[in-house]
Amino acid sequence: MAVNRPLSRELAALVAEQFVEVLHAPGYGDGAVDLLREKLRSLRLLESDERRRPTPGERDAHRVLAGC
Image (cartoon, rainbow, N blue to C red; front, side):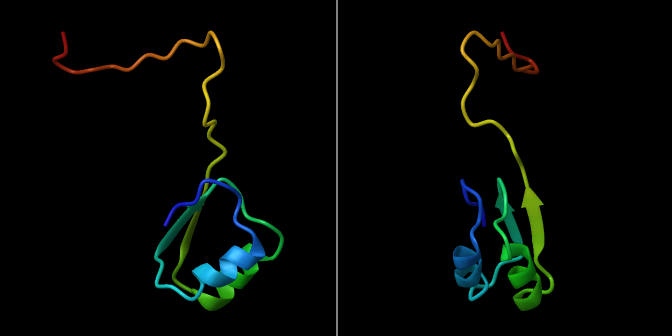
């Protein structure tokens, strides 16, 4: 499961009612991690602070194999 904003304790309680193996969020609110660890012992938590919007003027390059 992935969410696009920090996971609050309230949302963590709803997630804990589901079967979830991996949870990816840009952050976790106070008490959310503790609640998830208590309810879902085999859950893997991922956290990323990746930017969602490019900086104006920033160059973005992608390598393509066998591309033209």
